[in-house]
Image (cartoon, rainbow, N blue to C red; front, side, top):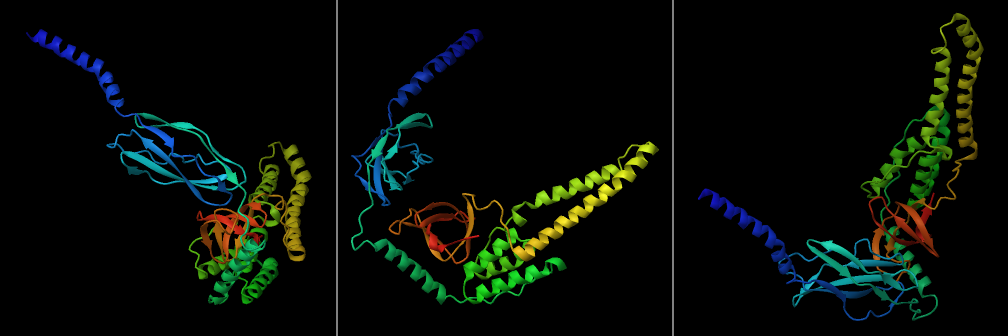
Length: 376
């Protein structure tokens, strides 16, 4: 009797595993989700914002509809945004926002993705892009818009109360005291003329390029805190365009060579005497050479100013912004992406006509007028 029960249970279990995939596949066929674009998209003018709709039908309403479908699928010549799905009459509608950046069609290629147990396909679509709309008033509309924008920013700026110039001071080594005092005096003159962005640009440039750079960081941070900046990054100290680590490695190398001659010389008395007598002068010469190089750098810093070697050809530039707005596209008729306060440090990585693309350390970004950018 017990044997029959075991055989029955084994047979029941085998039937269960055999028919389970069939049952699941039959249940899956009850829902056949598919995407399709609604209507034919109308042409979009470059720099303007428009929306197109894509529909998801045949989806199991008990499960969560997919989101973030077009994440990472934006073409290079457009800005793409995707809204959360909206359920309407058993189907889901997604609103896709497009802003063309160039005067050529926006092509969204077809692709597939996996969501749960479903393999879903997105059909491709081609959206025609037309040239920017002609100004309605006159040919100077954009120039007038830029002038109005800068005038508004200037009025807001001059209504702002400027805090006093900080009295924070550091004590560099005596050889660098003169350069330090000249930099502080120049920054104070700019500050008294209400050129706050220029003041921060000058301090940051010297913080990066000057031999007294590390002594300028506390003053620059105090100014930024007085202007309301919560956190900004320090400049990497690269006097004369050479990383500080290079100076350190050079000095360590010289000292190591000297240590080899004086400490690790062979134990034979004749060779030791030969090495010590012969190379002691070389070691002294090496040490004196390091001192001469250091004094030469100080002299260049004092007489010739900063020499930012190798920075002019870099596609990425450090900059400080005047008070301005950042746009999604290089056009005053575009949407405002972010707003930047006076003295905001940014990285400028692209230029188009009278516009530059700026990125702040906190993640804010946008196209800003070149007249609001102070590179250093």
